[in-house]
Image 1 (cartoon, rainbow, N blue to C red):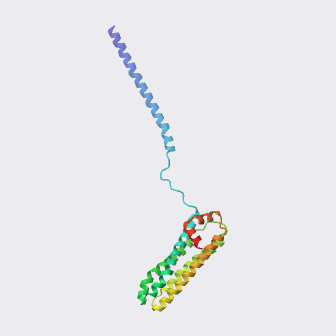
Image 2: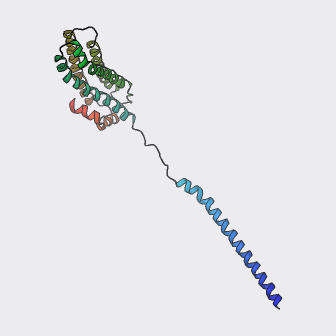
Image 3: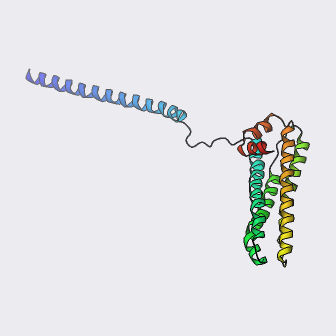
Length: 215
């Protein structure tokens, strides 16, 4: 009788262990299936990290390039026309004059060529009245380039102080005329119907706004 009970107890124990193993295997199988199912869903739902912000439109890039170049050139040339005449008038020798104005004038000449190049390289998007707009931009580019040429001539070597003063005065006059020419051309651009996209780009750019206020 005792043996029978012991055998039955052992059988019950084995049955319990087997049941536990089956249950454990079932749980592992469920967990694996759950992980396999959830894996791709988690991957698909993950947000994109470090995605690049969209660039501006062609019209916005064009307006930024042109207005930035014209605005910086205008500010530099205005400073030059205010300071250079007085500096050369105070010089007693040509060496003093060249030391006082040479670096400033050369930087303006270089800046003029750079600005003219930036305007020429700016890619104007397709828009209304494109030919008329390009003509005004050509006027601006040429006026800026004229300033650089006039300064190059003013910095010619082997001049007396009187000759240098005369050359610089001519360069300053050319620069002032170029400022006026650029302002007039920009005013005419403002009166053109250049299409909604280009018009919006011009209105939204800070440098373009500054040019509009002083055109």
